[in-house]
Length: 592
Image 1 (cartoon, rainbow, N blue to C red):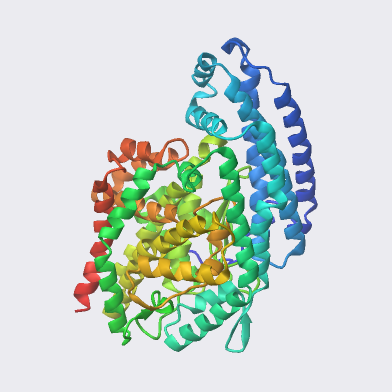
Image 2 (image 1 turned 45 degrees about the horizontal axis):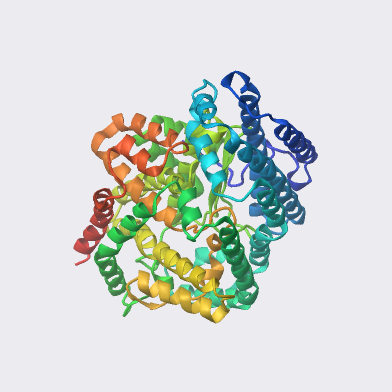
């Protein structure tokens, strides 16, 4: 039984002293020197005529991987500093320096990739069969293919350099704006993270008041935020044009190692099955004595007074449920709590949202969230710990083979969330609480089928408009509201036109179209979860094997190998949707 857990994470074991850490400063200085040395070595590499003289290439690939491990360690730490305190000015400066270093390292990798392209096909094939590189064959082939689709190394290096004060700077500007926003609630200025938690209040007047202030706060910054969004998109559009890429979805699909056919099939199946979801929204409105749900009612609890749980209770509940599926998963989670890998304290100055990040050189992870005591927070905690467990499964693999895409990254997290959500429903002490928890579970389906879909529809439409010029705040609001109406089948009474401003996912420079991978991961893990429940304890090993392959296979091949299904066809997606709809049908039945 865990008790007295810290709700602030331990970063001191990584680099003591936070943003003022002398160890971090020295670490960054060493990385700077190593980047320069790597660049010199890569430039001097001679093309191998035979495998017999290819050893310098094998060594270089090994060294690049080791450097990336240390570089990610630095980046994760600085990211944690900026998330725990958005007003840490020194941390912002460190992030700026880290971005410049990233551009320099990117130039080294661009140069290496260009040289990989020049290796003769027979020698390349022989290199990939060598003992050292064979485990990286998929990743190296992927690098070579992606390099071939880009401009020459000189231009791509220039792109990387200009991105620091161009592309990435617009994302940084958004984070700076968010750090300055406060939302007045009950006479107190709350951070956006704290205010967001208030919108799950059981009191509709509180939700409505907070939402009104929320919209007002984002509206006051909308012009600046629109500039950020427009220039991020303009950068991508122009870069794609120069690379000869004709589809705005080409990069996000390639990043997620999936085909457009798979994506379209997934959305088609969801669209065909939205009827019961709309019925759920209508039934929930009736239970709340409302003519219909507004945007801020969608996640509202069904009772005005909802019980709160402590962080210790949440940790023990998550630990117990993980243990029912996998002792290995439970052992890892217990260690994460005991070593204070979780930042959950509810305080001002934190960035909104939740995430998990890895420290590969230390072999550790950290989880970030703001814990307010709701069962939704418990699910978020399980979700992020699922990410951390996924990382632990892959820790012994070569760094290049650990680079899983976002869509499969959401598989382990959503799987963990489902374990806890199912258990919470079954363990509910009263019928009322059981219904509330069942609704909470269904609301994840609403999010994935409706909310995430609206983001995808908005972003697709926005990019089409942006190709013709800058998009105004009013037009962005219109595009967002239309996308929400379409995704929700016009089932809400009030929408969130400024959602494009308040959702940080639209401003990620690391992940274009930061939306559809969530729904993919949700349904993919739902299908896996159904198998786990059917097969019992024997599935634990299969699950770990699947997670281990997520960084070195396309998703279609991953599903074929470990599940025996074809993701380009509707069968698997329909079976996963059916599992999600079963909860909705149960909810509708018990509330008749």
